Picture 1 (cartoon, rainbow, N blue to C red):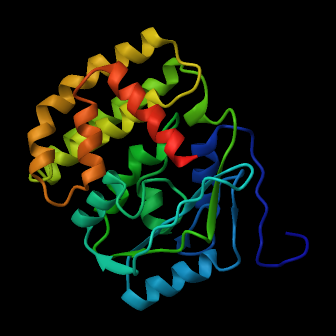
Picture 2: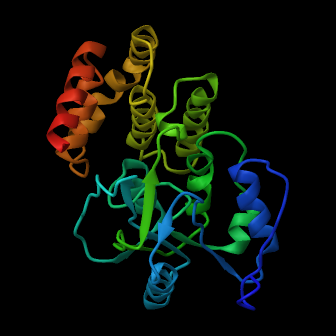
Length: 269
């Protein structure tokens, strides 16, 4: 900020990630917003590429693929696809099924007025709790493949790999809110409700240092959701083979899913 006149440094008491983002949005001087989380890093063209995509398609909202990696730089995954433009219904599908892109706050170029209307809520999983409302405000959404521009660095002790605590169960409140939204706005997209629960359960099951009793309890409690929706998922030609296999595994037993997950991790290494 001392070196560049177009940089402003804001300071506030620690109120959590959502509070910091909302504070920044409220004080932003321009009409569009992009986020960078404090532990991550970006390339020089992170903003430029999203702005170019917005202008190319005259898009209201830009979502780009990002790169997830470990602290040593390993674990990067590359996916090939050409940038394209879509509507809000398809964008919801891509985001909440993890096709091309995800629901994280970073890797997106937002209109400021929409973020003011739908601020990030406090607590864990704040971006998944409001992203569907944000997308629903847009008419034209551009999706880009600039995964090498944003580096999400997964650290030991982060929310998603920390020991299980009651705050993690906030995700199931979000599942209920999201399900009510789909029933009201997109009743023909019922598979998205199943995907939201799938994402929630898998995130919890992948936590480190979880007692087997807790693992089993979570699996068995939500297995009925996947069994209820399995036929719907298997019939849908849009859903990938890997996602269908995952749904099938979530309909079995915790021991089977746990073994399949361990085998999958070994293959990735």
